[in-house]
Amino acid sequence: MKIFSGPLSMFGAKAQIALLEKGIDATLVMVPYSTEAGYQPKHPDVLRINPKGQVPVLIDGDVEIYDSTQIFEYLEDQYPLPALWPREPGMRAAARRLELASDEVFFANVIKLMRSANSTPELRKAARANIAAYYRLMDDRLTGEQFISGSEFGYADIAFYMAQLFAAFLGAPMADDTPRLVEWQSRVTDRASVAAVAGAMARFIALNGMVVPNFLHELSKSPRSKSAAIQPEQASNKLEN
Ligand SMILES: N[C@@H](CCC(=O)N[C@@H](CS)C(=O)NCC(=O)O)C(=O)O
Image (cartoon, rainbow, N blue to C red; front, top):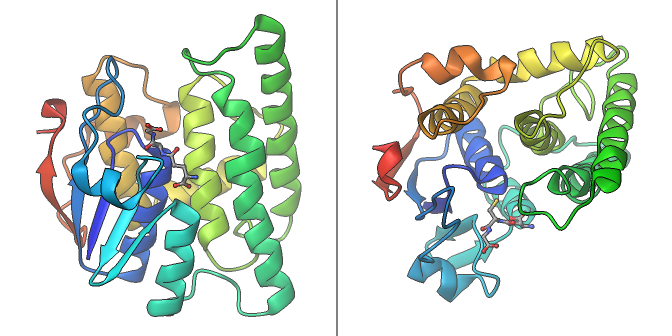
């Protein structure tokens, strides 16, 4: 299996974490990316498989797919254990809704904080307020639960972990008013899969002279994890070597 991701790709990181959680051996292809030029030049396999030219892209034999959520679905069908969607249909539907909302509702606000965003100070202020409100919503969900979609870690956690990592990176971290969510953040950061992927991203952020979110400080200093089942094929971004 081959997974195409990028050193600062939140969607690629979702797929990488899921592969590690499932214990699947995969080759990691980091596509060219720099903070100045973005995702250029595009990797030929990414262009061939994804008409949008985006990562993540997954190749598993004859199966060639793109989009982090589509990759989640394929992994769950092909490699059911450990399960990362809840078993019960109602809970499973709720987890899928949360995964979608994380990517499409919460992250839509995070995009407005990006330097390249066609945004105004008013829009950025509104985005920050929406982000804070979403944190409170997730904090409520964690009442009596360890994870976003119930008692087990899963795809809804992976999606929201990466989305909140980028919110924090762009200056909208959680505050004291969401203590359960802050605990969830450290519980998830401690997972081997997440530490490997978020740690590599934190080191990329630090090497590029950007500010590492507080909760990733330790990981940004630690050496590359040797336990990861995903082996890099090529690290195209020279800062990653
Ligand atoms: N909905 C897609 C979004 C993928 C996406 O936005 N990928 C970004 C990196 S995080 C990308 O490849 N951007 C390059 C481009 O748009 O040219 C998913 O979940 O995989």
